Image 1 (cartoon, rainbow, N blue to C red):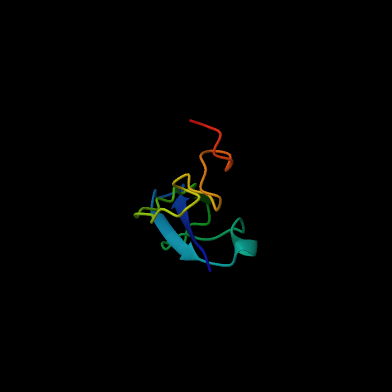
Image 2 (cartoon, rainbow, N blue to C red; image 1 turned 45 degrees about the vertical axis):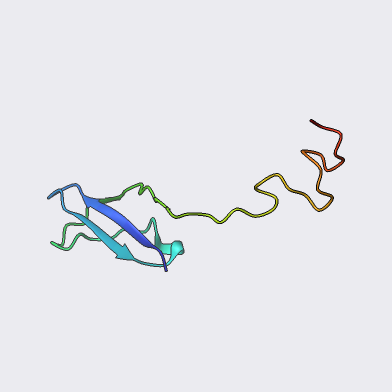
Length: 73
């Protein structure tokens, strides 16, 4: 289940809630009980190192350049 971030307009508290996608926009009270909340847009950062594959390095099954025919220099 995804986690969503919300902010309370009454007290300014920011909080997260795990809930089904079908309930993402449904009203939710803040932890202090205020009903006036808004769902925030959260940026997701994904990091890591990808291991290059044959396609990512330009190599093809036929072993030739950008189009596989070996006619490019």
